[in-house]
Image (cartoon, rainbow, N blue to C red; front, side, top):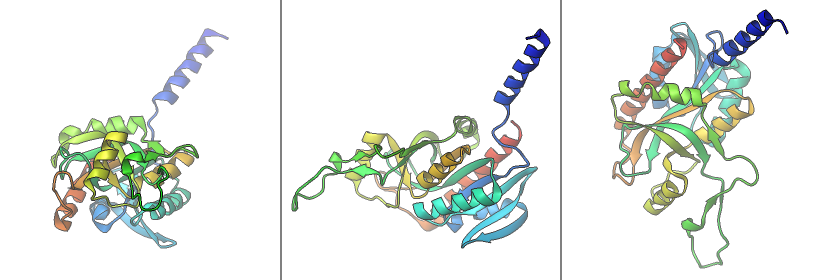
Length: 265
């Protein structure tokens, strides 16, 4: 091959490898389950237009030059899976960001701290050892079940790095990266929480991310999960609606900074 053609070929490969994971002409899909997890995003959208698809609401608009779609998934894994699939089919997003509130697991994680979910584990996919009637439950015998297919999903490494680079501007608490447990369960049993914290290094739990991450992976769309701790049983910090709303708004402000950073990459 002629040297000039080789140089052009290598340059093309470099440009492809270094290209951003998004494009301004393709939207960033940002998800939140509850009103308090999307209200700040919707308020900040420029030229917002609401779209209802089969009962799920999406708001189209812009954050600067970047197209953004805000999706209220509703609470729970089934709702999140449906909302993610409908959002992909309708809007063809370049990136999906799932964000909102979460319950913290370790006692050193406090309300306002942010969790960047590098790994999202389906906490409903567990094997329980056989126990005869009357022997009760034993959580310490449970293991995450993955023999029938993946149950752990990873956020896009480039998006995780970009989110981590913004930690200095976050003012509600500290920023941690790790594993988020995801299922339709609200856990308040301290032994259950401590077990999964040790067994899976879980930092917290929420109710949508594993489902949306699985759909995003099926469509090979870069994905990121970011959650703010709104309550923590081990730290004796209960869910308080007014505080949760304030913290959720702060999380959304962090996501808006992330979208701005995407534009500058």
